[in-house]
Amino acid sequence: MKAKIKHYIKEILLFALIMGIFANVISLYKAQDLNKSTLSLQTQKLIDASSYTVPSNKPLMLHFWATWCPVCKAEADNIQRISHYYNVITVAVNSGTDYEIQKYLNERGLTFKVINDKEGTLAKKFNVTVFPTTFIYTRDKKLIFSEVGYTSSFGLWIRMLWASL
Image (tube, rainbow, N blue to C red; front, side, top):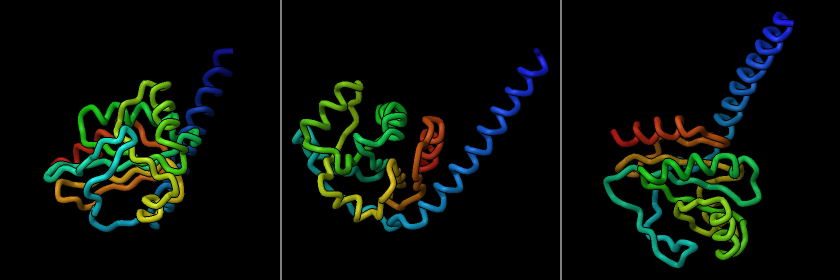
């Protein structure tokens, strides 16, 4: 019995390792098409009708997501945690009205800043076709990391720390 359990644990760990490698390879492949230019966003209207101006001399995380995306739902708490310590602006793509997005956030206890990209205009500008997609910019608004798919809190922390240097 003990040998069977060990065998199954090894198989599960091997499967998780292979899936992790596979997911990272896909992410790297998908990230090749993203817009790599210097961040050109200035002031944007948020779903709460306030304006958000991209801060100067501070790193920034720009996160594209959608209310209908299951991976985005799984990653939302990671984005929430990072948003308490770093500049994070998120873009909800093709996710309904400002009210519907705010309701979605309220139901999940999320408070990060959100731009409503109703027609996907910003997503097109950044060549985002898969959700979630995250861009991390340095203090001088140069792209340092881009990630397609799920990213852990730890991964986001490390990337934001690196962008802060």
